[in-house]
Length: 175
Image 1: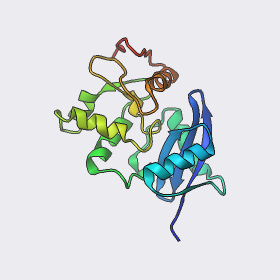
Image 2: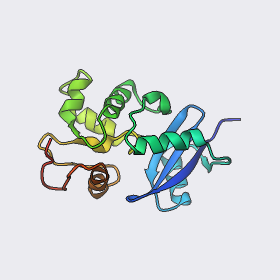
Image 3: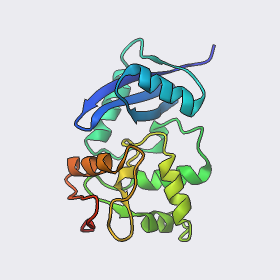
């Protein structure tokens, strides 16, 4: 029998964060209004079913709390089997951005050794299966404007505010 992913949720100021995990690590996160919406999202995105956790996994919950408090984890904490090597490089680099700070797409592209890959970096971040915990919201445009985000620019702005980054939707962030 296949190990099904399980999930739990945590209420945040931006909404309910759903966290999916399996024996390999945290496999997905999403903001959703209820369990059914998250289960539908997970099935559409990953083409597999998910279930509510049967027994609370305190280790995973502690890791999530640490991430939300600014701990810098590693990709070994995540199950990223559905991503390419390039996407994993981008996500690993994004994990190195400290809480309360932002970096540009150009910075990420340079860090991974591919300075011309700005669009590819943006695409990799847009397909991040574990947003918020792998903090793609900390990547902004070169002009300092926060730019697009999977859960919408207003959510990205709120996340940055939660981390004490003074972000607006139109004005550049001081970097």
